[in-house]
Length: 277
View (tube, rainbow, N blue to C red):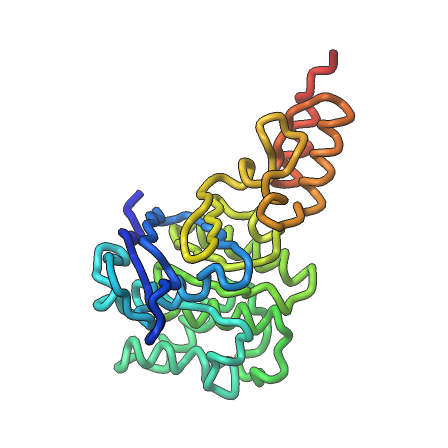
């Protein structure tokens, strides 16, 4: 797969300070990959996202988005979904919000094509509400889906989500994860900043930041399970494992097994193949 994000020895300094917010950070993310970016407050996560958007100038290093220098990257390359979602909305209805994005991208688009594309994107992201619905009447989960639809209509291949599930209930968070997985299957690249370990568990890859640098870059199974499958390395960084992981760890300790599931289906399958001695 081609490289969606390439960061090489990137450092970012806040004006008037000598200690970098990001320090010699290098990261490669392939197209069609979901990366969970986590770390404690002040680790540099949001600064990293803003730097990828070209909003924070870099003091050293280089960044390329789908082969383009970050200064030349457009909305077709990368978009961000903020928390709270209302911070990025300007239209008063769902139709206005999505139509504004399409007209900016295709100034000569006709009404029929406009409606067709809006209908298609709403279906894709599971936004099942009337197109004339007020944005103020949408639930938190619907607002997040609207923001993702907006980003996709801009043509973005890379989506940055900053704590996008923080204000959602459990069902809405699960629906959001399912939507992101479907987008990844279609080749979109997801960089998801989150403190929610369920979000991290659902990703393809975990990148852990501390003090402006990467301290771990691994598969979620290696973030949540040690070699024996009886302890959780994430705890060493101050993160409590999600319920699924806690259950698997307890099972491994009691039954002297080594399974390392990252989903309920993987847990069930692993249990079906356990060989008892």
